[in-house]
Length: 262
Ligand SMILES: *[C@@H]1O[C@H](CO)[C@@H](O)[C@H](O)[C@H]1NC(C)=O
Image (cartoon, rainbow, N blue to C red; front, side, top):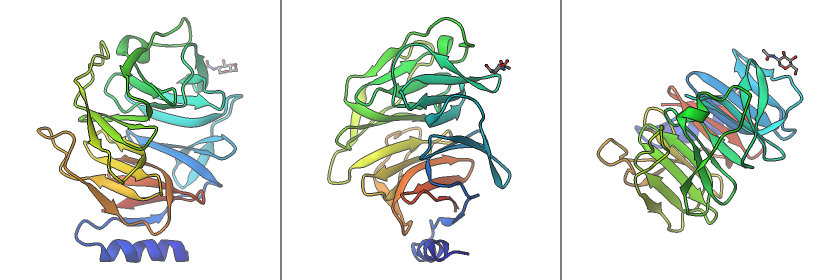
């Protein structure tokens, strides 16, 4: 066990009954991004190489395309390349999806895909997201007029982070039309987020611009935006996170992958 993991374990032990215990994940050199959904875990590294977790090894995804960001979920596995082009995994190949230039996508929504151009958020409805199989083009709907750079959808709607770190939430998005309930500001104080990830079981995690991890407390069907951000001590600064089936996956600024359970 490394000193880092000991430190993290110690911190999680002293932080009370909702302690998360973290352990080192399978080693991936200089990881930058991670996405877990439906039992599968994908990751990218600084070389924009892409992998999926296969037991205790990361299996390299072969092919000419290199993704800086991968997402997997209800509508399949999607990636955004270093040139901000969108790809969908079809028959084991990342296949180009003509249309918008995107810097980030999220497949967490039930039946739809969302993405950000870096300053504006878009939604791809079921008829395109689930059905696209390599031919033709797709048509995106504007999801929000806020300047949102990071988007994620889960059980209770979608969450966005704007270019100055404020967090926004919408209770639901209709997968067939991409129409949505209104957006509300969830937090806009001194706590600035770099990303928020909403999981399929309703849990919502935030990662602040200074690399701290938060769980959104009080999220339920009646109060889908929750109550406050509760810090999960990690010991080191994180750069990305994702949650699925009881495992919170985190990537440290140094590029190490850990997963935490409670
Ligand atoms: C994947 O891409 C390769 C290279 O273009 C191609 O030869 C192969 O047929 C593709 N596989 C499928 C299942 O479409």
